[in-house]
Image 1 (tube, helix red, strand yellow):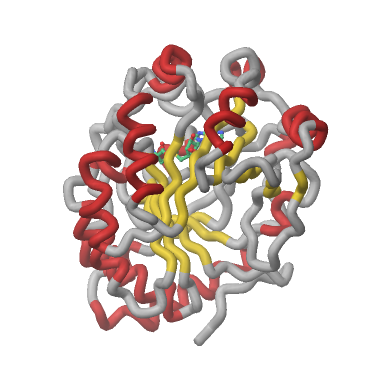
Image 2 (cartoon, rainbow, N blue to C red; image 1 turned 30 degrees about the vertical axis):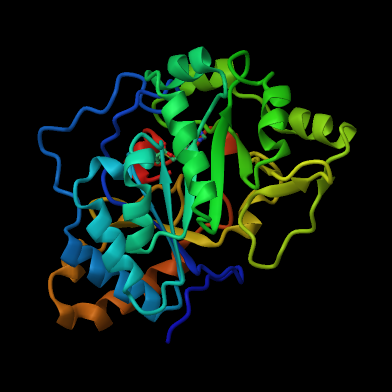
Length: 327
Ligand code: SAM
């Protein structure tokens, strides 16, 4: 097995695979005008291509897979993709990031297919504010789906909320109420600049440190970072069943803990969310005989991974918005 490791000693057991660039939401910071397919748009990877891709990555030690998009549940064969991925030897954690619009309808089907971790994007607990951010008045049903996932004992349930200045950055009291009795993790993510969102970013970016100061003052404790942990700084409090994670991509050493690679819906390997290039793997997914070539191609590219992103300098690479790459 050739391990997925780079020249800075980082290992990459975690793959984020986008299965579709389309999304049904219009989040102000991502796709404010909704998703519009390019006339020349290439079809997303087929189930067979996905299976070959996953065999290649597991051959190199990948064991955690996150299905993302766009919005993965827009894809009609999502359940089949989950079932197929769960059956690939070596994949032990099968996660998905979703806006939750189909969660209450499809949860049991997805769990039956092998899904064992879910991140649901919930940018606000206030119905009107949620609708303003996402373009959809769906908060209640989405939160119902989240409670169903908790009741069904889905092993990992997390919420993602992007922090937006003057939009949702004063909602900590509502979140604390929410977390008091729920064994759930909420992750507050700092807004990232992308190719398309500069004016919005300038107006609404807020550093997560302000929130962390409030947490510390309220008695939340920062947990020591586990060896294989992702980029979130995790906090807990003895009076709360839930936990809070902070994802601060502009903080020092953020990329030192990078443990993931990405593949876009059309099969391009992205070494960094904000990288300057994609490496087309699709030509190597056309027959089962190509496994060795695929593994060699992936292994040969890891050395090109940069030590860190260049977001501080406003360099967003080829990512117009996160839906295009798989956030
Ligand atoms: N549609 C799914 C969802 O809503 O979770 C998956 C794709 S979405 C691109 C993945 C995550 O990226 C969401 O939690 C979203 O809020 C986050 N995201 C998108 N654009 C972002 C940005 N510019 N900065 C920080 N997070 C962003």
